[in-house]
Length: 230
Image 1: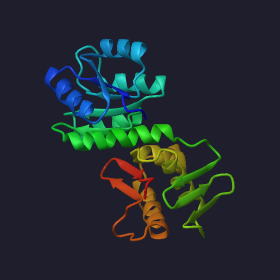
Image 2: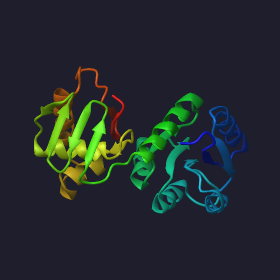
Image 3: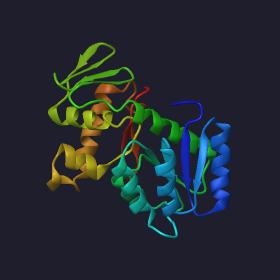
């Protein structure tokens, strides 16, 4: 991430664009603005920004469809900033490819923190079958070995698969449905209790204090995220 990394702010409200743009400028980013999806796609062609901050209520396209298009193009972090704060909307945005979701009204500091986290994740997405480091946790996908502080930790196959799926998207909220589909299979997308049990077991084995998890965070009603810097 360079000092003047370009960030595209997509919102039909001028005041919001200016508020976010000012916060980005103070943080060392170079903000770009788009008042609708058409302008946003044109900006992407001209400038290739590192991230997009997207409102879901746009005049010419549903924001979820724009998220899908941005994710399809790849190489860009996507933060949804919207007043549509229902859990179903958050899940839909994340499943469409958004990296994170911030609800309006918003705190600029939180928005910037989520943005930085998403940019870091984009820079260090690990290759499949390799070695993944998440803070003090090291995962050897090929050897199916997990260690903490240099000591091997025994995980069940499900626990290992869940940890790998989260570690491959460090800092990103991964929805319940996605994790259940990937780890247990499409027929188990509604079996949330399977996921809760596995997550609880991972915390017991990997967290310093399982009652106050710092590595594996729960986003109530949405999913889990792995905090790679722990």
